[in-house]
Amino acid sequence: TAGVRMSVPLIFGSVGDVVSERSGVMNIGLEGEMLVSALISFMAAYHTGSLFIGILAGGMAGLAGALLIAFSRKQDQSVVGIMFNIFALGFTNFLYRAVYGVSTDKINVDILKNVEIPLLSKIPFIGDIFFKHNVLVYCAFAAAAVVWFLLRYTNLGLKVNAAGENPKKQSAVSDAGSEGNTENSALDLLPET
Figure (cartoon, rainbow, N blue to C red):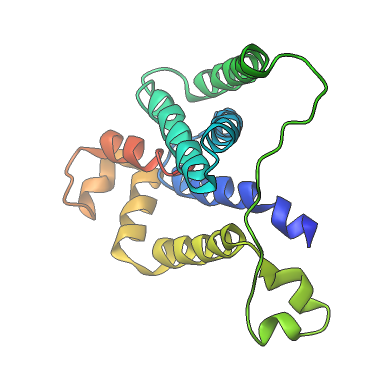
C-alpha cells in the first residue's frame, strides 16, 4: 500500500506531462516543478497547520513553475527544462536551509487520513492495496482515467493531439486558427495544477 500511496505525486505529474507531450510541449522541467511544489506545499502546511492550504500552495507553486517554463518557449525546450531543474534543486535546498536550518531534528506535518471504500476495501489482498488510502490517491486514479478519456474520446482531445502533431495545421480542427503556440503553452500549465 505504501508503494501506491507514494506513487501519487508521480501519477499527477505524469498525467499532466501526457497532456503537455500530446500538445507538442516537451516539459523536461517537470521534475523541478514537482520539487518546488513539494517544498512549498510542506512549508505552507507546516506554518499554517492546514493540509488543504499546503496542497493548494503546492499546486500554485507548480503553476508558477509551469508559467515560467511556458513563457520561455522561444528558447530551446530541452535547455529551459534542464536549467529549471538545476535552479529548482538549488533553490529548494537554499530555501529549506534558510528557513529551517541544517539541524537533524525532524520537522513533521499531519498527514491525510485514510478513507476505506465500503465493500471494495474488504476484498482480500486487492482491497488493502487499492481501496484503503487517502483522498489524493483516489483523485490521482480519477485524474488518470479522466485525462485518458478526454484525450481519446473528446473534441478537446482531438485539438490537443492536433496541436502536438502539427501546430501549423492545427487550424483544421480548432477554432483557434494559428494560435497553436498559445494553446500549447496553456496546456503546459497542467502538470502541477
